Image 1: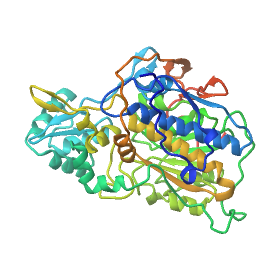
Image 2: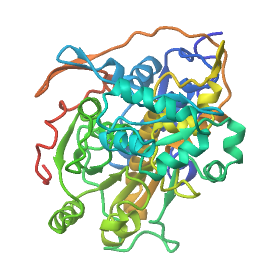
Image 3: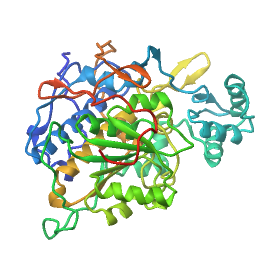
Image 4: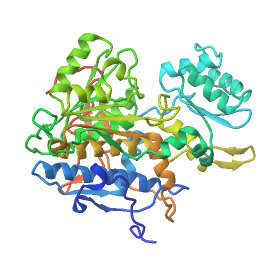
Length: 468
């Protein structure tokens, strides 16, 4: 079978359910299959990047400068594995923490996530394990505690303590679960607000015109980035590569993991600020007045308590595009739970699909890359650009993507034939405050040139709360 005999899936069509022009769809080259496995991870990955390229073209068209966007599937494969390819002053980066793994339980398996120190403390407190123990000893103690209980009981207990956990479920068990059913009923990209049945938005009603186009589809546009981990920062990193002025704000006291900051911080400025501080909130209001996009990646409802929920923000700043990302979606009993790509894989049946059998019985597996995170990031960036392309007519609006809904999309894709293969990886090197950074550029070519990032990650938290 040739590389292009099986078509790439068309994921999200665009603003309003497919208003983007067919000739805005980027041309895709490269192989159709390389990771292999029981799910079409390649289709999800390329489909999300194509949606992003399509939206970039639509935004460029709305601004009077239509870019020619192309996608090479080998570049997509490398970008979805960007963390593994990153080198910081010659060293490899640190991935999952020792306690972020599967543990056998009395009846099945459970996976914990303990990359962040506060999640590690919550996990150990829930299992009555001394948090002062070294990781190797703590892991033995966690394993012994896990074997005494049922997976779903552990899931409930750890979450109740503020930790992150998921019991292994089959795809069928997930669809029968109340949260799985809620996720399945939601659209891949949710959009709301901004439309007016009586025609274009009235003056002052949020229909702020776009500035003249510059070198990229997002040039001259400002993005306030309140995201963490991988998915949200991937979205804003992509918008920065396409020309946006991106200011990321993290809370003091719970810093982002350094290597994660370096992987997703290209092209952005980095600030720390306490959103609970009234003076900080006042400053953010000033930033939002002159911003075009607010992207948030906190659990649903978390920012509403400080007046930064989508509805509150759009009420004060109707010109904004407010983009939200969550683990489990916005409806169902788990909507407010913590979650990460690896955890969503376990609950949604993906880890069961990738399970292997051996002398000890079934052992759960994982996707070859953090595909839910990356796909969600590119889809969120696409939704932002499509909404901006229509802002003059419709005003601002809110767009949403969840990891669980991306997982549902992946499980539903037809799986093409083809085995695993090794693809060439193109990297670039930039000088940073942390030493030379070898990294993977964005997986888009614009007007015949591979897109690059406008600069290296800034020193973490070093920037002020100002626009350029």
